[in-house]
Length: 506
Image 1 (cartoon, rainbow, N blue to C red):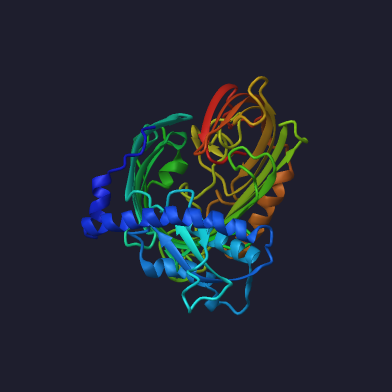
Image 2 (cartoon, rainbow, N blue to C red):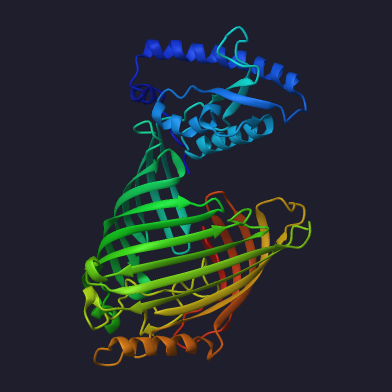
């Protein structure tokens, strides 16, 4: 991957201030920075270990943040001022709140890390000050205006080249504009443009609007899928670490470029469709390192409602998925057991308040199997097939467990681990879906109950194996030897070596 490109000339042009004035301001900030370092040392000597000493924060100054709006920063630091508080500070409480504001500034992603904090006593000759007053100085150097990344990526049955450009702090309020383009072997092309901004200077409350277009070869289902559309979403984080995301998307989909031996199921779904839906995602991730957790747990749900009431479009369904994972360490040995469970259902509903539920389409049904999913099976190798094509299912359940060991002479703190795993799952089509005639709502409800109940009727398709795992900060890499143990007649297993790259693994 090529390193980010930073252009200092472009950065200065974007600052929208006079260069001479900016130079003077930077020189002044540098002198203040040195003075506050010395003052910080004096203050520490003065206070010593007396953290219960009463203090009042009389001022907060942020140095070097020349391109960031004053009003944006004031919303972050104004709650620190004692004049805006009902109760007085102890020194320990003041340090805690200053640390919280500093962490909030860091999470905007527009300042270089770390942000330094300095505390000083005001001038004692100033009659407007009191003996308990302290001044807070935050040294926050801004990152460059933009970053451009280019590179290549390789995964199971896919390779691509990409370019990504990010413009930061566009209007002085931590806004981000991200443009992405890629060309590949399976994802033939993908383009997106996304604008992201925090709301009310809160890094835990964001709004994003995104437009995209892509063309993806679905070789396991004898077609190519073309998508064009956009979405908008609100994201917020609760104090307990629960992340919520709610949004709307409108997507034109096309099933095209069918191969000569495409199955009747795929041919029936060929052509155009439009999905109009609202989604909600909830994540509670308490793992210490998501790519290779040593301890903690993950809980996640994703729900989507399409074609209901005013949403229109020509796809109508309720789709819901749930996922959980837990990581348990064996003392301080570096050995960790991880176990995960996933499940989902696609429930047909009537379009726009009608009476006849819509039949599910290949675009919306679940797929199961692959090196980042149920290992030991080919991509979309589990579940219903029509001839050579994996046509997807409406209900699924999957689970797995992995035992991760440190590699001798590499160390238990290394991101490279040895793993032994077992995983499996079942993917089913809705009972009665393929019968002639249309189902009413009562029939759909009854058939969904029967389908869910049948998940436990037989053994799940499963596989076991071992391999190597490498946890990079941006993705997890696995190379495994797998052996399918239970496999149904139409399913496609993968015995032997497989390679996977992704950010989520079963």
